[in-house]
Image 1: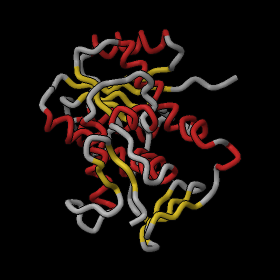
Image 2: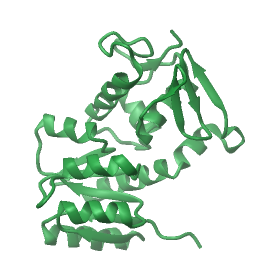
Image 3: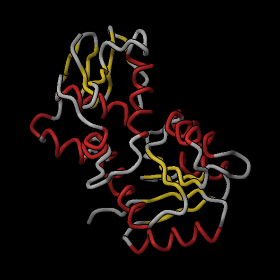
Image 4: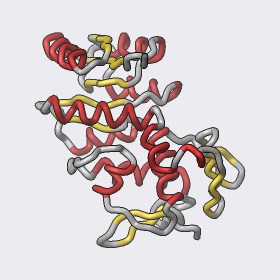
Length: 238
C-alpha cells in the first residue's frame, strides 16, 4: 500500500490552517501545521513532508525567508498562499525558490490541482511519463551544457550549476525538444503538470529569468534559452 503524502501548512491564521488541513485530509493526504515561520522551517527540514503550503506574512520569520532557507537544504515543492497581490511579491516568492503561488481568496479545487501536480512532478511522475522508463539515465549535451538525467544535475563547462528541481526540469524538457518553441501555457502544462491550467503566466517568465542568470554569460543577451517572438521559449545549441 502506497504511503500517504504529507502536506505541511505554514499559516498563522489558525482557522484558515485548520480548514485547509480538514479539506486536504479529506482528499487522502496527511497534514502538519505550523503557525509561525521558525516552526515551519524546522518542520519542513526535519519532518518527511512532500509539499509545503506557505503564507508570506508570518510571525518570527516571513515566508520569503522560510522558502529561501528551505532551498538551501531541500527541493520539496513550495506553494505560497498569500493575500498580497503585488506583482513584486509574486516575483520575489518565485525567485526565492517557490514553485508557485496562490492568491487568497482561492478555490480549493484549484489549490488541490496545484498540490497534486507539484507532488507528481517532484516524485518524477511527470518526467517519467514524458520520456519513458527505458530512457531514464543518460546525458544530454547542448553546447557547453551537460544534463545528467541520472543524478538530476547540469554542468556548464564542466562546472555543476546550482539549480532548483524546477529549473532542472525546465531545462531538461527544452533540451529533449531542442529548437522547438513552447508557449507559456504549454510550459505550465508540460513542466508544472497543470492540466487545463491557464493561470498567471508570469510564473514561467520569472523561471526563465532565474535560469538565464545561471546558464548565460549575459542574461540580457541569451545564447541558450531563447525567446521566439509571438510563440514562446526554446533552447538552442548555439
